[in-house]
Length: 148
Image (tube, rainbow, N blue to C red):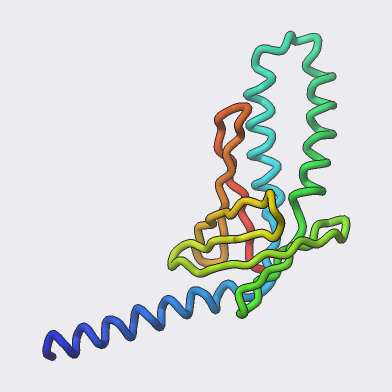
């Protein structure tokens, strides 16, 4: 096989694989709430390190309430369409729209709105992982979405 034919074949395969990844994103994905809860509990435990023992039960109760609110706000499902649009539906039924772009092993999720920030997610099989940094703790939290 000549170098030109090999290069042409490689380009075709790369193009096909790139399109396959984008097509593979289409469908409904749900937040892995077990992983989310474990990550949040780890962050909360780290913050409770300096709290006096007598105050820990109250702090734990408060943090459990915050965690429940976060799960309700951050959870839900996201539907990626082949046309590059996505719709997030939260557990309370509220929706948010976004666009998405295939970047190979990652995608860019571009939410609508002036203050919205573009996020990059890593695609590994049926898992889509976004890493979020907490400005208060400098900890990185992984939000994993799984294909339904």
